[in-house]
Image 1: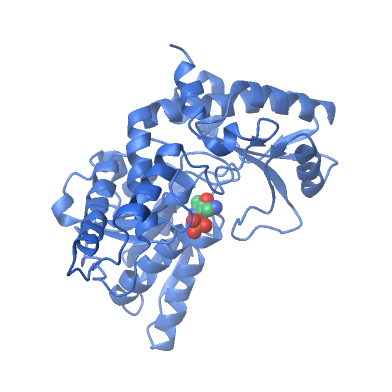
Image 2 (image 1 turned 60 degrees about the vertical axis):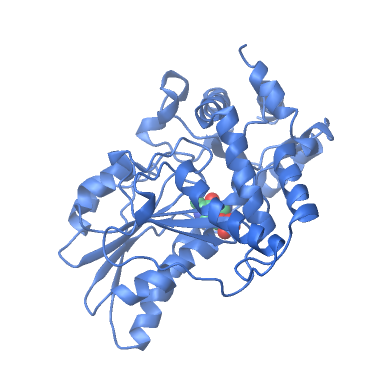
Length: 394
Ligand code: PMP
Protein backbone atom coordinates (compact mmCIF):
# COMPACT_ATOMS: atom_id res chain seq x y z
CA UNK A 1 0.00 0.00 0.00
CA UNK A 2 3.09 2.28 -0.11
CA UNK A 3 2.12 5.82 0.80
CA UNK A 4 -1.62 5.15 0.56
CA UNK A 5 -1.85 5.14 4.32
CA UNK A 6 -0.35 8.64 4.31
CA UNK A 7 -2.94 9.98 1.85
CA UNK A 8 -5.70 8.47 4.00
CA UNK A 9 -4.20 9.96 7.15
CA UNK A 10 -3.80 13.39 5.53
CA UNK A 11 -7.42 13.32 4.39
CA UNK A 12 -8.47 13.20 8.05
CA UNK A 13 -7.21 16.74 8.77
CA UNK A 14 -10.02 19.14 7.83
CA UNK A 15 -7.85 22.27 7.99
CA UNK A 16 -5.38 20.71 5.56
CA UNK A 17 -7.96 19.53 3.03
CA UNK A 18 -9.80 22.86 3.23
CA UNK A 19 -6.70 24.79 2.06
CA UNK A 20 -5.09 23.02 -0.89
CA UNK A 21 -3.22 26.23 -1.79
CA UNK A 22 -1.38 26.30 1.57
CA UNK A 23 1.34 24.06 2.98
CA UNK A 24 1.64 23.84 6.75
CA UNK A 25 5.30 23.39 7.72
CA UNK A 26 5.19 24.58 11.34
CA UNK A 27 4.13 21.49 13.27
CA UNK A 28 6.95 21.85 15.81
CA UNK A 29 5.16 25.03 16.96
CA UNK A 30 1.78 23.31 17.05
CA UNK A 31 0.23 20.46 15.10
CA UNK A 32 -3.02 20.33 13.19
CA UNK A 33 -5.85 18.13 14.52
CA UNK A 34 -7.48 15.10 12.87
CA UNK A 35 -11.26 14.73 12.69
CA UNK A 36 -11.19 12.00 15.37
CA UNK A 37 -9.79 14.50 17.89
CA UNK A 38 -12.37 17.16 16.95
CA UNK A 39 -15.14 14.54 17.20
CA UNK A 40 -14.02 13.36 20.64
CA UNK A 41 -14.08 16.93 21.95
CA UNK A 42 -17.47 17.57 20.37
CA UNK A 43 -18.89 14.38 21.84
CA UNK A 44 -17.56 15.19 25.30
CA UNK A 45 -18.85 18.77 25.26
CA UNK A 46 -22.28 17.73 24.00
CA UNK A 47 -22.78 14.74 26.30
CA UNK A 48 -21.10 14.84 29.73
CA UNK A 49 -19.26 18.16 30.10
CA UNK A 50 -18.99 19.06 33.79
CA UNK A 51 -16.26 19.85 36.29
CA UNK A 52 -14.01 17.02 37.46
CA UNK A 53 -13.38 15.87 41.01
CA UNK A 54 -16.60 17.17 42.51
CA UNK A 55 -19.13 14.59 41.45
CA UNK A 56 -22.57 14.18 42.92
CA UNK A 57 -24.21 13.59 39.55
CA UNK A 58 -23.35 11.43 36.51
CA UNK A 59 -21.78 14.06 34.19
CA UNK A 60 -19.35 15.15 36.89
CA UNK A 61 -18.53 11.55 37.76
CA UNK A 62 -17.99 10.73 34.11
CA UNK A 63 -15.66 13.72 33.68
CA UNK A 64 -13.63 12.68 36.74
CA UNK A 65 -13.42 9.17 35.30
CA UNK A 66 -12.23 10.53 31.93
CA UNK A 67 -9.41 12.48 33.58
CA UNK A 68 -8.29 9.38 35.51
CA UNK A 69 -8.48 7.29 32.33
CA UNK A 70 -6.37 9.91 30.59
CA UNK A 71 -3.62 9.52 33.20
CA UNK A 72 -3.56 5.79 32.41
CA UNK A 73 -3.56 6.59 28.70
CA UNK A 74 -0.49 8.81 29.09
CA UNK A 75 1.23 5.95 30.95
CA UNK A 76 0.34 3.39 28.31
CA UNK A 77 1.27 5.70 25.42
CA UNK A 78 4.70 6.28 26.95
CA UNK A 79 5.18 2.57 27.66
CA UNK A 80 5.42 3.10 31.42
CA UNK A 81 6.64 -0.24 32.83
CA UNK A 82 5.43 0.46 36.39
CA UNK A 83 2.25 2.55 36.19
CA UNK A 84 1.58 2.11 39.93
CA UNK A 85 4.75 4.04 40.75
CA UNK A 86 4.37 7.06 38.50
CA UNK A 87 2.51 10.36 38.67
CA UNK A 88 0.82 12.03 35.70
CA UNK A 89 -0.15 15.70 35.93
CA UNK A 90 -1.95 17.62 33.20
CA UNK A 91 -0.61 21.03 32.22
CA UNK A 92 -1.12 23.63 29.52
CA UNK A 93 2.05 22.55 27.71
CA UNK A 94 5.75 21.88 28.10
CA UNK A 95 6.55 25.32 29.50
CA UNK A 96 4.11 24.86 32.38
CA UNK A 97 5.20 21.25 32.80
CA UNK A 98 8.89 22.11 33.22
CA UNK A 99 7.98 24.91 35.62
CA UNK A 100 5.89 22.41 37.59
CA UNK A 101 8.83 20.01 37.93
CA UNK A 102 11.04 22.93 39.03
CA UNK A 103 8.62 24.42 41.56
CA UNK A 104 6.75 21.40 42.87
CA UNK A 105 9.65 18.97 42.95
CA UNK A 106 13.16 20.28 42.44
CA UNK A 107 12.94 23.31 44.75
CA UNK A 108 12.10 21.06 47.70
CA UNK A 109 14.92 18.61 47.08
CA UNK A 110 18.12 20.61 46.87
CA UNK A 111 20.44 21.62 49.69
CA UNK A 112 23.26 24.12 50.01
CA UNK A 113 26.14 23.30 47.65
CA UNK A 114 24.14 21.01 45.36
CA UNK A 115 24.62 21.27 41.60
CA UNK A 116 22.22 20.91 38.71
CA UNK A 117 23.06 20.54 35.02
CA UNK A 118 20.76 22.24 32.53
CA UNK A 119 20.82 23.07 28.79
CA UNK A 120 21.78 26.67 28.08
CA UNK A 121 21.09 26.55 24.33
CA UNK A 122 17.98 24.42 23.88
CA UNK A 123 14.44 25.81 24.19
CA UNK A 124 14.24 28.71 26.65
CA UNK A 125 11.35 26.90 28.37
CA UNK A 126 13.96 24.37 29.51
CA UNK A 127 16.26 26.94 31.11
CA UNK A 128 14.22 29.58 32.89
CA UNK A 129 12.47 27.27 35.40
CA UNK A 130 15.80 25.92 36.67
CA UNK A 131 17.26 29.42 37.02
CA UNK A 132 14.12 30.40 38.90
CA UNK A 133 14.63 27.48 41.27
CA UNK A 134 18.17 28.68 41.90
CA UNK A 135 16.87 32.22 42.59
CA UNK A 136 14.11 31.05 44.92
CA UNK A 137 16.49 28.89 46.89
CA UNK A 138 19.07 31.65 47.08
CA UNK A 139 16.46 33.95 48.63
CA UNK A 140 16.05 31.30 51.32
CA UNK A 141 19.80 31.12 51.89
CA UNK A 142 20.40 27.91 49.94
CA UNK A 143 23.05 28.33 47.25
CA UNK A 144 22.75 25.91 44.35
CA UNK A 145 25.14 25.87 41.40
CA UNK A 146 23.63 25.74 37.92
CA UNK A 147 26.04 24.29 35.36
CA UNK A 148 25.57 24.15 31.59
CA UNK A 149 25.06 20.78 30.02
CA UNK A 150 28.07 20.93 27.68
CA UNK A 151 27.41 21.22 23.95
CA UNK A 152 29.32 20.65 20.75
CA UNK A 153 29.13 23.10 17.84
CA UNK A 154 27.17 20.46 15.95
CA UNK A 155 24.22 20.77 18.33
CA UNK A 156 24.79 17.45 20.13
CA UNK A 157 25.57 17.42 23.83
CA UNK A 158 29.27 16.95 24.48
CA UNK A 159 29.15 13.65 26.28
CA UNK A 160 32.86 13.58 27.04
CA UNK A 161 32.79 17.03 28.63
CA UNK A 162 29.60 15.97 30.39
CA UNK A 163 31.49 13.31 32.34
CA UNK A 164 33.76 16.09 33.67
CA UNK A 165 30.85 18.40 34.50
CA UNK A 166 29.30 15.75 36.76
CA UNK A 167 30.44 15.78 40.36
CA UNK A 168 29.49 14.25 43.72
CA UNK A 169 27.02 17.10 44.32
CA UNK A 170 25.20 16.75 40.96
CA UNK A 171 21.58 16.21 41.96
CA UNK A 172 19.56 16.80 38.80
CA UNK A 173 19.88 17.05 35.01
CA UNK A 174 17.44 18.73 32.62
CA UNK A 175 17.86 17.66 28.99
CA UNK A 176 16.06 17.71 25.67
CA UNK A 177 14.90 14.60 23.84
CA UNK A 178 14.64 15.89 20.25
CA UNK A 179 16.03 19.36 19.56
CA UNK A 180 13.45 21.89 18.31
CA UNK A 181 15.96 23.59 15.96
CA UNK A 182 18.25 20.79 14.77
CA UNK A 183 15.72 17.94 14.83
CA UNK A 184 18.33 15.56 16.23
CA UNK A 185 17.89 13.00 18.98
CA UNK A 186 19.99 14.27 21.91
CA UNK A 187 21.00 10.75 23.05
CA UNK A 188 19.77 10.80 26.60
CA UNK A 189 21.20 7.32 27.23
CA UNK A 190 24.65 8.88 27.05
CA UNK A 191 23.65 11.44 29.68
CA UNK A 192 22.50 8.60 31.93
CA UNK A 193 25.82 6.85 31.34
CA UNK A 194 27.72 10.02 32.32
CA UNK A 195 25.73 10.90 35.47
CA UNK A 196 25.36 7.39 36.85
CA UNK A 197 22.29 5.56 38.10
CA UNK A 198 21.21 7.87 40.94
CA UNK A 199 20.74 11.32 39.43
CA UNK A 200 17.20 12.25 38.31
CA UNK A 201 16.91 13.33 34.65
CA UNK A 202 14.07 15.51 33.38
CA UNK A 203 13.39 15.22 29.67
CA UNK A 204 11.84 17.99 27.57
CA UNK A 205 9.97 15.71 25.19
CA UNK A 206 7.99 18.45 23.41
CA UNK A 207 9.33 17.34 20.02
CA UNK A 208 9.34 13.60 20.63
CA UNK A 209 6.10 12.42 22.26
CA UNK A 210 3.87 11.30 19.41
CA UNK A 211 6.69 11.84 16.92
CA UNK A 212 8.85 8.84 17.79
CA UNK A 213 7.94 5.68 19.61
CA UNK A 214 8.72 6.37 23.27
CA UNK A 215 9.14 3.32 25.50
CA UNK A 216 9.92 4.12 29.10
CA UNK A 217 10.61 0.43 29.72
CA UNK A 218 13.58 0.74 27.38
CA UNK A 219 16.81 1.01 29.46
CA UNK A 220 18.01 3.61 26.92
CA UNK A 221 15.26 5.90 28.20
CA UNK A 222 16.03 5.72 31.90
CA UNK A 223 14.68 9.17 32.78
CA UNK A 224 12.62 10.41 35.71
CA UNK A 225 10.40 13.09 34.21
CA UNK A 226 8.92 13.30 30.72
CA UNK A 227 7.36 16.67 29.95
CA UNK A 228 5.42 17.32 26.75
CA UNK A 229 2.77 19.41 24.99
CA UNK A 230 -0.41 17.74 23.78
CA UNK A 231 -1.02 20.48 21.21
CA UNK A 232 2.19 19.54 19.35
CA UNK A 233 0.94 15.98 19.09
CA UNK A 234 -2.53 16.43 17.53
CA UNK A 235 -4.46 17.41 20.70
CA UNK A 236 -6.06 20.79 21.49
CA UNK A 237 -4.13 23.98 22.31
CA UNK A 238 -3.51 24.37 26.03
CA UNK A 239 -2.81 20.69 26.68
CA UNK A 240 0.24 18.89 27.98
CA UNK A 241 1.40 16.57 30.72
CA UNK A 242 4.19 15.67 33.09
CA UNK A 243 4.98 12.03 33.73
CA UNK A 244 7.18 11.28 36.76
CA UNK A 245 8.72 7.87 37.44
CA UNK A 246 8.98 8.44 41.23
CA UNK A 247 11.72 5.89 41.81
CA UNK A 248 14.70 8.21 42.39
CA UNK A 249 14.06 10.42 45.37
CA UNK A 250 10.67 11.62 46.59
CA UNK A 251 7.56 11.31 44.42
CA UNK A 252 6.09 14.18 42.43
CA UNK A 253 2.79 14.53 44.28
CA UNK A 254 -0.50 14.54 42.41
CA UNK A 255 -2.22 17.90 42.73
CA UNK A 256 -5.62 16.69 43.82
CA UNK A 257 -8.57 18.56 42.41
CA UNK A 258 -7.75 22.16 43.18
CA UNK A 259 -8.78 24.18 40.15
CA UNK A 260 -10.66 23.16 37.04
CA UNK A 261 -8.66 20.95 34.68
CA UNK A 262 -8.81 21.45 30.91
CA UNK A 263 -11.17 18.51 30.54
CA UNK A 264 -11.89 18.99 26.84
CA UNK A 265 -8.16 19.23 26.21
CA UNK A 266 -7.52 16.08 28.22
CA UNK A 267 -10.21 14.26 26.22
CA UNK A 268 -8.53 15.49 23.02
CA UNK A 269 -5.19 14.10 24.20
CA UNK A 270 -6.66 10.62 24.68
CA UNK A 271 -8.21 10.78 21.22
CA UNK A 272 -4.91 11.97 19.72
CA UNK A 273 -3.01 9.06 21.30
CA UNK A 274 -5.62 6.58 20.04
CA UNK A 275 -5.38 8.06 16.53
CA UNK A 276 -1.56 7.97 16.61
CA UNK A 277 -1.53 4.36 17.79
CA UNK A 278 -4.00 3.38 15.07
CA UNK A 279 -1.82 4.98 12.37
CA UNK A 280 1.44 3.88 14.12
CA UNK A 281 3.96 6.33 15.51
CA UNK A 282 6.76 4.25 13.92
CA UNK A 283 5.24 4.80 10.51
CA UNK A 284 4.82 8.54 11.11
CA UNK A 285 8.42 8.81 12.37
CA UNK A 286 9.77 7.07 9.27
CA UNK A 287 7.59 9.24 7.02
CA UNK A 288 8.64 12.60 8.48
CA UNK A 289 12.31 11.72 8.78
CA UNK A 290 12.22 10.55 5.17
CA UNK A 291 10.83 13.94 4.14
CA UNK A 292 13.42 15.75 6.29
CA UNK A 293 16.16 13.67 4.67
CA UNK A 294 14.88 14.56 1.20
CA UNK A 295 14.91 18.24 2.12
CA UNK A 296 18.39 18.26 3.73
CA UNK A 297 20.02 16.12 1.04
CA UNK A 298 18.94 18.53 -1.69
CA UNK A 299 19.29 21.76 0.30
CA UNK A 300 22.91 20.84 0.97
CA UNK A 301 23.63 21.05 -2.75
CA UNK A 302 22.45 24.68 -2.86
CA UNK A 303 25.38 26.88 -1.83
CA UNK A 304 23.13 29.77 -0.77
CA UNK A 305 21.81 27.78 2.19
CA UNK A 306 23.37 26.76 5.47
CA UNK A 307 21.62 24.01 7.40
CA UNK A 308 21.81 24.60 11.15
CA UNK A 309 23.31 21.98 13.39
CA UNK A 310 24.93 19.02 11.82
CA UNK A 311 25.26 16.38 14.48
CA UNK A 312 27.61 13.66 13.32
CA UNK A 313 24.75 11.22 13.56
CA UNK A 314 22.80 13.27 10.99
CA UNK A 315 25.58 13.80 8.49
CA UNK A 316 24.04 11.75 5.71
CA UNK A 317 20.37 11.58 6.54
CA UNK A 318 19.00 9.47 3.77
CA UNK A 319 21.50 6.64 4.28
CA UNK A 320 20.61 6.21 7.95
CA UNK A 321 18.02 4.05 9.66
CA UNK A 322 14.93 6.12 10.51
CA UNK A 323 15.67 6.27 14.23
CA UNK A 324 18.95 8.15 13.64
CA UNK A 325 17.70 10.71 11.17
CA UNK A 326 16.42 14.23 11.64
CA UNK A 327 13.03 13.90 13.27
CA UNK A 328 10.93 16.02 10.99
CA UNK A 329 12.71 19.32 11.72
CA UNK A 330 15.11 21.10 9.35
CA UNK A 331 16.38 24.63 10.10
CA UNK A 332 18.40 26.70 7.68
CA UNK A 333 19.55 30.18 6.66
CA UNK A 334 19.99 31.87 3.31
CA UNK A 335 23.40 33.50 2.77
CA UNK A 336 21.87 36.87 1.73
CA UNK A 337 18.15 36.87 2.46
CA UNK A 338 17.25 37.65 6.10
CA UNK A 339 15.12 34.92 7.62
CA UNK A 340 11.97 37.00 8.10
CA UNK A 341 12.12 38.07 4.44
CA UNK A 342 12.60 34.45 3.45
CA UNK A 343 9.57 33.59 5.59
CA UNK A 344 7.45 36.17 3.71
CA UNK A 345 8.70 34.98 0.34
CA UNK A 346 7.87 31.40 1.23
CA UNK A 347 4.39 32.40 2.40
CA UNK A 348 3.80 34.17 -0.90
CA UNK A 349 4.10 30.65 -2.35
CA UNK A 350 1.76 29.23 0.30
CA UNK A 351 4.39 27.78 2.69
CA UNK A 352 3.90 28.39 6.39
CA UNK A 353 7.26 28.09 8.18
CA UNK A 354 8.77 29.46 11.36
CA UNK A 355 11.15 32.34 10.66
CA UNK A 356 12.84 33.96 13.68
CA UNK A 357 15.13 33.07 16.57
CA UNK A 358 13.04 29.96 17.39
CA UNK A 359 12.87 30.45 21.18
CA UNK A 360 16.41 29.14 21.43
CA UNK A 361 17.86 30.01 24.82
CA UNK A 362 20.88 32.27 24.45
CA UNK A 363 20.25 32.77 20.73
CA UNK A 364 21.24 36.01 19.10
CA UNK A 365 17.83 37.44 18.18
CA UNK A 366 19.25 39.09 15.07
CA UNK A 367 20.53 35.78 13.77
CA UNK A 368 17.24 34.30 12.69
CA UNK A 369 16.64 31.17 10.71
CA UNK A 370 13.85 29.38 8.90
CA UNK A 371 12.49 26.16 10.34
CA UNK A 372 10.53 23.58 8.38
CA UNK A 373 8.82 21.11 10.69
CA UNK A 374 6.75 18.21 9.49
CA UNK A 375 3.97 15.88 10.53
CA UNK A 376 1.99 13.00 9.14
CA UNK A 377 -0.03 15.25 6.78
CA UNK A 378 3.01 16.57 4.87
CA UNK A 379 3.95 15.01 1.53
CA UNK A 380 6.94 14.52 -0.74
CA UNK A 381 5.28 16.78 -3.35
CA UNK A 382 5.16 19.59 -0.78
CA UNK A 383 8.88 19.17 -0.08
CA UNK A 384 9.70 19.06 -3.80
CA UNK A 385 7.70 22.23 -4.41
CA UNK A 386 9.42 23.94 -1.47
CA UNK A 387 12.82 22.93 -2.88
CA UNK A 388 11.90 24.40 -6.26
CA UNK A 389 11.11 27.73 -4.63
CA UNK A 390 14.26 27.63 -2.48
CA UNK A 391 16.37 26.74 -5.54
CA UNK A 392 14.90 29.68 -7.45
CA UNK A 393 16.28 31.98 -4.72
CA UNK A 394 19.72 30.40 -4.59
N1 PMP B 1 10.47 22.72 24.60
C1 PMP B 1 10.65 22.50 23.29
C2 PMP B 1 11.79 21.61 22.85
C3 PMP B 1 9.76 23.04 22.37
O1 PMP B 1 9.94 22.82 21.07
C4 PMP B 1 8.68 23.83 22.83
C5 PMP B 1 7.69 24.46 21.86
N2 PMP B 1 8.29 25.16 20.79
C6 PMP B 1 8.53 24.04 24.19
C7 PMP B 1 9.46 23.47 25.05
C8 PMP B 1 7.41 24.87 24.76
O2 PMP B 1 6.19 24.22 24.57
P1 PMP B 1 4.80 24.93 24.92
O3 PMP B 1 4.74 26.16 24.07
O4 PMP B 1 3.76 23.94 24.55
O5 PMP B 1 4.80 25.24 26.36
